[in-house]
Image (cartoon, rainbow over all chains, first blue to last red; front, side):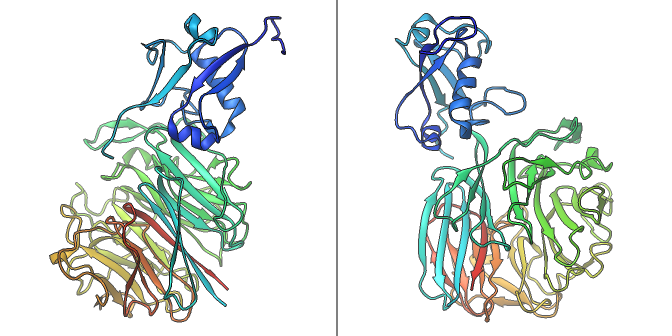
Length: 110
Length: 371
């Protein structure tokens, strides 16, 4: 296992992507990413975009880095969509017990 | 043996419909990018295997896809459409200033000579260019910054740059059109631009003959006569004989001169096609009869073409980028509807047949003629 500059071992973070992004990235279920602390929304999306460059701009705006308005972030039954992207994610996510869920807003009818 | 490849962008994916040169038997391929809005896809005239597609949703924003094998496989390329300078404001629907925000790519126009060079017309209105096959995009900011931008405003579909026309005889010349700003031209490869709207009259504007603010729906040109342009404005079909410097109305005997699509016959520069739509309040054909109108005199005198098209209870629309022609003899004409039909005429409009009947709403139609 590689180690970050701080010497800490990277953590195994589970992420569930929405349907269209799974298709775009060519993954069939949740993905596991090795990420060095701190584990935040920002560092998780950084890792997603590094591993799957085709997803750049699909979760957050490429210029402003604002979350796309029809997407929400959940973990441990908590809505993290409006938290700071630099806030540490729950311990259950950083230990790999629970995934970070990236979910498309329910907007049927279009 | 010739082949025809019809590239169809829809509200829920892309389709590629193919036939041999007889254009009788058609095969539908796709959906590609299922579930995504495909505003436009188009092939390079310098390399028919090179295609570009604009893929977007409200959920995940904008992607650009590229195919190097005629649409069999696709690869996502660059999607970083960052305005080259602080975008400033344009007018909102109520006339108040509104910040410029990138929303989507409406139109992709491949270079006529280089498969790796492609232009993207975007909402909020700007023109971008890639010279590396779509990997990186650079705004031609002289358009947005030439001075009238603060007076542009969105049409009902957004403030979109929807038309890009390249001139094979003058590579430094590009025409574009924006709803609702008007038409613009550069003669120095995108460095500087000027509005070309003299002669347009838009009664819904405070100043109906203003330099900008006109809701131009689409512009078409015959490549052999690039100084002559045909325009479907919100209302009015217009013609320019001087590269857009001045325009005159050629609606003539059309039953309504509202519409979106307009195109020119591949071999007859004075043969023009439009699809009249009842009004800006009722976006469907007059009396439930879907009819293409053709002028063989460069406008003013129009004839209805209805053979094979539904002549009762038809309430679909034909959007601005949803008509195209092939280069075969006889010239084929194609258009798609918001009801999911794609119609083809292998005889320049005399008769029509549906080549797809149950697609999602059609946003764009382009044709490649493969010799």
